[in-house]
Length: 368
Image 1 (spheres, one colour):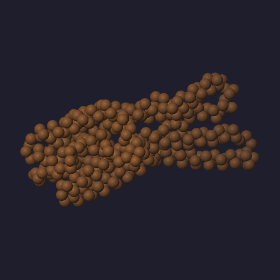
Image 2 (tube, helix red, strand yellow):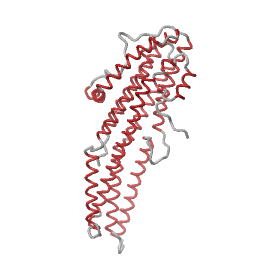
Image 3 (cartoon, helix red, strand yellow):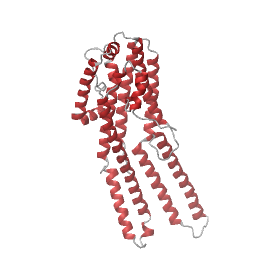
Image 4 (tube, helix red, strand yellow):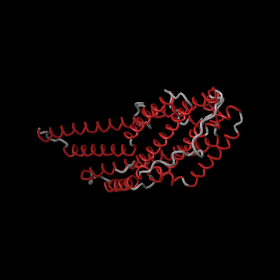
């Protein structure tokens, strides 16, 4: 199987740009934005590292607390062992470290916040890329007709400089405003990064080929790109350790179900041992095994709360279906104005999806 390649919609690689140039030669200059690509790559690479380290620390906090609880459950049996004091000390330190990392966010919360800020930045850059195709559609149409892209590149450059300045000076404040809009009852005023004074202009008539390529480029890169992205997140690979929310949800449900089944079987064994006259039955260890299963179930529940695969799956499913609905209206548009209307609706949907993603992950916790 070939893996889904993320961020190809921004034409990050030489191969992406080569394919786009062949498919949309008349409007390729309007899609080729090196400054944006460079900034996106820088933010995306750091965000990936922050996400990985944040989730590793979250998983570590769960393991440490689980170890402390397991050790505590056997304390009355191990207190006479050689080295029992060392064992107890390690368990105490593990529980304290796990509580500090998971419950109080020591070493964890700062990484998660930085990851979310970088994800906010990278998605705003992606939104700029596609909003440019809508708001500056008249400039793209004119440039495609005349072959002179200087005016379009100038207005795009001015708009991008404004966005870069905001991200450099107000990123955290804009992030906080975005995730609090719904709670404050505010209609997202910051959806549109690229703006035009007055009403949005309709592109002038240009060559049929250029207009068709412009629509096809947006359709392929934005509509189908986002639809494929959501579907990839919903795909089950069968792996037990996977970045896919669908795999994580299946693994969590299977593990939790297995723990419950084992607990039921264990209690049946206990019943036989207690009421069936099973002499020499390891009653103490059977009780301890029951505690271990409870600890395992708690650890799975905490990991599920930290990763939130159930919420992710529902969000991606709703997003994919919404994209499909808007795409249907876009494909059925008989005029440029109607097509642009569907494109605007798509951009607003993508902004709302970003906010939902940020808000959900900000609430996620690995506290056990």
